[in-house]
Image 1 (cartoon, protein in one colour):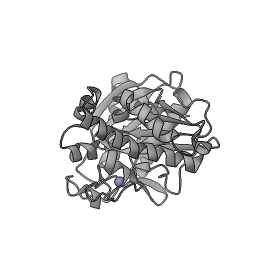
Image 2 (cartoon, rainbow, N blue to C red; image 1 turned 180 degrees about the horizontal axis):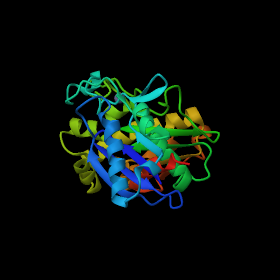
Image 3 (cartoon, helix red, strand yellow; image 1 turned 90 degrees about the vertical axis):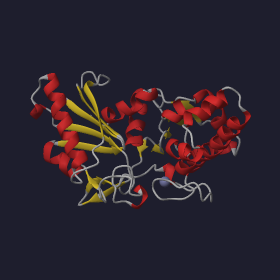
Image 4 (cartoon, rainbow, N blue to C red; image 1 turned 60 degrees about the horizontal axis):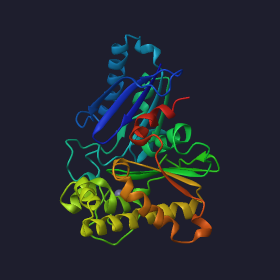
Length: 308
Ligand SMILES: [Zn+2]
């Protein structure tokens, strides 16, 4: 039995998994992400939740020695071990604006998990989702591909020549924090002004619209001209981001996930495809844009895909 952990800024999900049935998540449980105590609180929460899942299935926790963890970035390395420097988790970071009841500069993850588990693999959540989509979803058989999430935040996992890209600290694919505009009102949780996540991410969108994003998409779906113009503008930003990664990496397929995209794909997919294909066909022709094959479950299976 292996453990699968999906850490988000607001929620931690833990389940156990039998290698013989990889798409079955057992004793699954969720909790709000720990935001108080020592900076190891999130790691200790994960270890406790695995123990609780073992108790539910009446198995000896010592049997569970392998864990896959999908976590939000950015990551930093301390003595070669991954720590989270995530503005939604670490209250000591400039981008967290004092919203959190802690002063953590980072949240150590890999070192405390290695004190409990023999084998630990931690990846950025979009990279984990890319692995899941390559194994079971819309990216099966693709060697040059990306998984792009458009949700509260924006990010991607990238694969070129059949190799998943990681970078020097496992941070390859932080597409949301690449710059797209000089709009001084578009401030990202990371502290950047005018990056993609600040312009189109679900959290920033609510702040800028002063209303939940789903209300905008509902009005657009009913044909409201002003709402449709806003959706067009969002797709111009996101479509250019897709064009940019295609132009840089020569991709053949992109899988799109995340709640903002998946809940509104009838409106968004044709607009994004038009943005991607409207320029430089020598680079963009032959690059398919598909909804995530695993749909909203792609987050669940990201951590599973990190296990052998
Ligand atoms: Zn940012």
